[in-house]
Length: 355
Image (cartoon, rainbow, N blue to C red; front, side, top):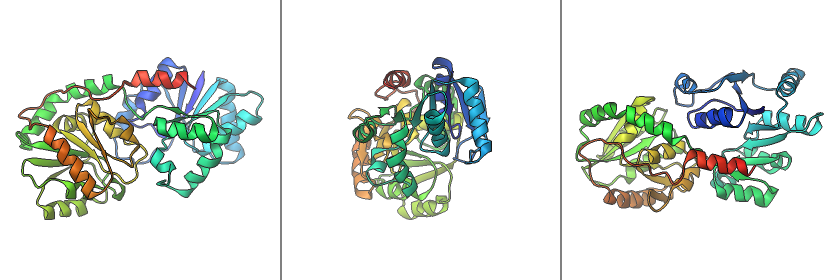
C-alpha cells in the first residue's frame, strides 16, 4: 500500500483523496490540526470515502522520527505522496535515501508558472523550490507550463490541475436547483446578467478591482460570495460606485452550489493565486469565466469557455464587457452544460501513468 501525507482535507482535494484510496491503493493521512480556510471542514470530511488517518504536526526530534518510521514499516510503500516542500516532505526524503528500504517520494505541489517566475508567496518557498526537487523522485503540479519548467531544471514534473470530479459536482448542482430557483426569485435576478465572485475577501483577491471594472449597466449584477476582513471596505466601495453589487456572505453545501447556478460569468481577479479551484466549479456549472493571468487556473480557459486578463481595472473591464455581450439575460434557472475542457478521471489517469 502507498501513502499520501496531506496537510488539510479540503474540497478541492477530496476527490483526489477518494480516488487515490479507491483506485490507487493509498492510505490517506492529514495533519490532526486544521485552520480556517473559509469552508465547512466537517462537511468536506463527510464527503470522504476513505479512512482519514491523522498525524501530528512533525518536528525535527526523535518523536517524529519514531512515528514516521513506524508508519513506513507498517505500510512498506512503493510511493509516498507529500504536500509541497513541507517538513513531512523532508522527512520522507531522508527515510527514502538513508533508510533500509527505498521508496519513491513525489510532491503534490500547487506552484503556478506565475509564482515560479517572480510572483511567489514567500522567499522561503522560492528557496525550497530550488533545492528540494533535486531529491524528489517526481512532482505533480497544476499545469503543463509548470511541469515543463521543472522538467527543464530538474528533469522531473507531471501536470494534474486542481480539479474535482465533475460527476459529483453535477449531482450537487442538480440537488441545488430548488435552492437556486428561490434565490433567483428573492434576489430579483430575472432579466439580469449575473457576474459572480466566490472566495475569501482578502486583499490578494482584488475584488475592489472587479467592482471598479463592472460596466455601468443597470442590468448587470455582481454577487460576491465569501467572508473576510475586506468586506466592509468593499461594500463601501460598491455603494460609492453606484453599481448593483450584492454581498451574500460565506456559503457552503447546496447554498454554494446554488450560487453557481445563478451566475453567468465567474471572475477570479486575483493578483496572486496558486490555482483557483473555484474556476473548475464554475466551468462544470456551465458559466463562462474571466481569470486573472496571475492565477494557475488560467490553464482551464480556452476560446470557448472564457478569457484571461491581467489583474487591472482596464483589462478586466474590457474582457468582462466582451464576455457579457455574448450572454443573453436569463429569465429562469436551469442546469447548463459542462464547459470543462477535460474530465477529472482522464487527467488523473494520464498524470499517474507518467509518474
